Image (cartoon, rainbow, N blue to C red; front, top):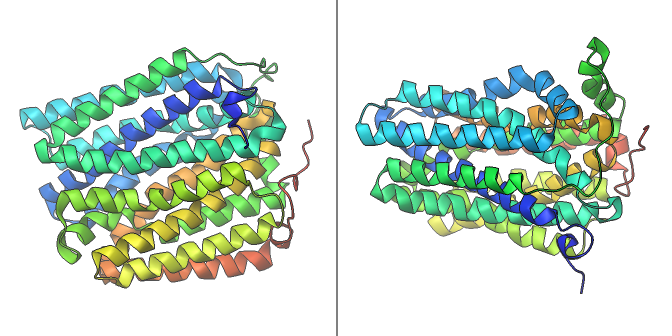
Length: 408
C-alpha cells in the first residue's frame, strides 16, 4: 500500500493541508451565504454575476504584484496575513447581517476586499507545496492536496447551507473562524528546504512569469484549456436559481448542489493518490474536459434533483483529473525562483476564470435565460477542447508529467 506523502518524507504537508482545507471551508461557506443572500435581496441573476466580478477584478489587477511578492517574501507570512484579512471580512459580513445594515452593495464591496486577499493567498500557497515534498512525490502530493481540497468543497457548501437556516450571520461567523484557523496552522509550518535567493525587482523580472509560460506550449495549452473550460462551463453562480426556481429544493438543496461536484472530485482524487497519471497525460486531460462539458449539458436540461446531482458529480470527477495534471505540469516544470510569478499567472487564468465565469453565466442568463446559458457553456467547453487539440499538439501528445523541461 502506498503511504501518503506526509507520512514519508514530508510531515510539513499536514499543517499545509489543514490550512488549505480551513481556508477553502471559509470560502465555500461564504459563497453559499453570499449567493443566497444577494439573490434574496435583489432577485437578480445579474447581481449574482456581479458577485463573481467583484472577486475577479482584484485577481486580474494584482496578478503581477502578487507574483513578485510570492517570489521575494516569505510565502507563509503572505498566506497568513491574507487569511487573517479574509476572516476579518467574514466577521464584518456577520456583524452587518446581524445588525440589519448590510445591503447588496455592501456585500459586493466586502467580497471585493476578500477577493484581493485571496489574490495574494492563492499563488503563495501554490508555491509552498513543492518545497514540502520531494519532486518524485509531487504528483501524489498534488492528488492528496486535491483530495483534501475536495473534502472541503463537499463539507463547506453543505455546512453553509445548513447554517444558513439559522441566518447568514451564523454562516459568516463560522467562515471567519475557519480563516483564522488557517492562519494559525500556517504559523506552525516549517519548510524542509530553504527557498533560493530572490532576484531583484526589475521590469523584466516582473513579466518573467508570463514570458516563461509563453515559451512552454505544454504549460500554456494546459492553463488556457482549463481557463476556457471553467469560464464557459462554470454554472455555479446560477445554482441559487436552479435550487429556488427550477428544482425547488431550497437553501439546503443549494448546499448539496454546490457539494456535488466535489463528491466526484474527491472520489477521483483519492484514486489518483494510489495511481497518479503517468502516461498519455495530454489525452487524459482533453478527455476529462470533454466529459466536464457533457456533464454541464446534462445538468443544464435536467429537471430531476437526482439527475442534476449525478451530472455535477461526474463533471467534478472529470475536472479534478484536469486539475491534477495541470498542477503537476506547471509546478514540476517551473524553477522554484519563478514559482510565485508563474503561480500568479496560473491563478489569474484559472482562479479568476471561476469568478469571471460566474459573471458570464449571470450575464448570459439575464440575456437568454438560465437553462440556455448553462447549455451554451457546456457546448462551448467541448468545442474549446477539440480546438485546443489542434492549436496545442504538444499538449495533446504529452505522454508523461515530465513533458516540460526546467531551465534553472
